[in-house]
Amino acid sequence: MTRPSKASSWLKLVLPWLLFAVLLLLPAAHPSDNILRLLFLTAVWTTTGLGWNLIGGMTGQVSFGFAVFFGLGAYTTALLMQYGHNPYFSFIGGAAIAMLASFFIGLPTFRLRGPYFVIATIGVTEAVRVVMNNLDITGGASGYRITETKAFSALEHYYTAIVAAALAILVSTLVANSKFGLALRAIKQDEDAAADLGVNPYTSKLWVHAIAAGLTGIAGGIYARRAAFFYPGDVFAFSTGISILLMPVIGGIGTVWGPVLGGVVFVIVEEQISVKFPNFHLLIYGALLIIIILLEPDGLLGLLRRLFRFLPLRQDKAKLAAAKE
Amino acid sequence: MSAVEYLDLLLKALLLAGVYAAMAVGMTVVYGVMKIVNLAHAGFLMLGAYFALEMFNRFHIDPVLGSVIALPVFFLFGMLVHWVLVRWLPKSDTPTLASLLLMFGFWLVLQNLAYARWGNEDQSILTPLTLSAVHIGDTISIPKVNLVVFAAAVFCMVVLQIVFHRSWFGRSMRALIQNPYASQIVGVDDERTARLTFGLGTAFAGFAGALLGMLYSFSPDFGRPFLLRSFVIIVLGGLESVSGVALGAIVLAILETFSTVIPLPWYWHGWQFYYLPPSYQPVVPFALLVVVLVIMPKGLAGLFNRKWKTA
Image 1 (tube, helix red, strand yellow):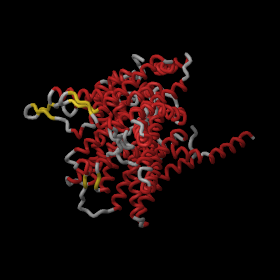
Image 2 (cartoon, rainbow over the protein chains, first blue to last red):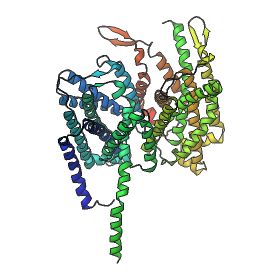
Image 3 (cartoon, rainbow over the protein chains, first blue to last red):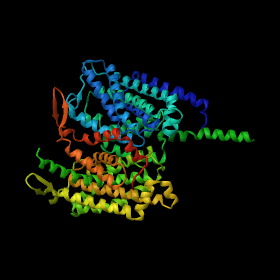
Image 4 (cartoon, each protein chain N blue to C red):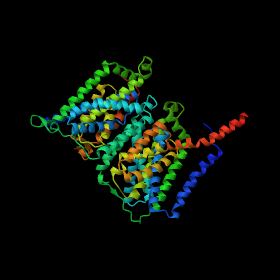
């Protein structure tokens, strides 16, 4: 690996803050409600994608079951708010319940090698949706409604989502740059070798799964509060779990900024194509998935990196030529 | 419930197990030889059901015959899929992220092409066969279609077993399952065997899908619950051997069928008995999967760690 040049590392440090500042100050420019809504959705989905990426991308444990955490976050938030709790407290409650659920899934399945975890996650989403469809206190399949006495404020929802996404990016960056993140990447490459070097794959997987579930739970709560009405066939849907997995894969699996890029692409495709051709957006995602896996496993970010590598490469060649002379 | 009613349910469970076995066996051979968890299996099942429907609507071919025709058609289709997509995957001893996502993407494509072609209404294949039943005594009545489907499934399983144990292709398949490196040393063409295996797995998926299409109504999202059931059966059966799959299929079918009639004891001011509400029945296979994973990890580790006993 080559060391990044000074300019690019400086850019890496400044660009996120710049983006964050622009997004915070954006409402001053009076954007339309639709733009705020799209950015809200992007932020919410990006948060879930970043969460998934921690376990699926960095640790290499693919989960098809993140709809469980999303839905549990949504329902917990709704129930807590209905009992008169502060919405922000409710989001944290949603995250806590999602984390608890992640242990229930992880404790038995992470003991085993191979595809057990993947298979179990599919089973768990299906089972949880059936249970939620029949549960009385949440209204079963007919869904749940949040009644807030305050006036609807698109801005408040927007800021909440942006802060959640920023939190997810912060967590991802911290994990990626920590010893813990190094351990996770070691597990992805070779679990036995990682264990020999003193990493406990079992507990590491459990913790990162919990962190990922917590982020997804918060996102679910934020989504539910704005939507105000949701039902198990929506938040617990298998396709919700697919969407959460697609963003990091499209953007660039295992990187911090890949899921963000994937989230932007996802919302654009979702809003532009699924409205005009319902059922067709998944076809596009499927085709994208195949193309990305076969041709560019690092996703859009990898593609971009490849494109931008041309410039430094030429400089290197020039330097080499100069050194030869 | 009377004993005769239990017997009726048991018979139905056994008939169901035949189809379940045919459904899971394709996935097992693909996993055994290539170490790919074939998520596109659900898509092939769904296509099989629509294949039988189209054959019936257009050419008035009986769906039982249609399911047999599906075997060669899906065999070729599977080989094509392997040639175009699957063979580019990096080889590995354990399922890789790439293989999971690729097969999953392919499933999405199949599913949504089916939505585009057939819409999202539920379809069903109705023939005189599916509407008549065999009566034994007063209480036991078994739809004829279940019997025919069971016979077809068992017949194909027997044929597969013979191919598996009596042909060169079967032998090279078993060799690759046991040890891919050693079998390459002794001259097994792994690429060709993998292609044929994938074709075989797909053929059985299409066949089982057509059979399932006769028993249930279906939509393009048809395969998903059956994909999960296939997983459960493979995990239960433990090995890639056909008998293991049959065993897993029987266990799952019986538990599923009897789940709503077995009283569940519950202690609350004295012992009480509850029955699982029928709306919760779909949870059974998934609950079973998790329970098996928790209580039998050692036996299952053998499944994916290639400590094969037979084969």
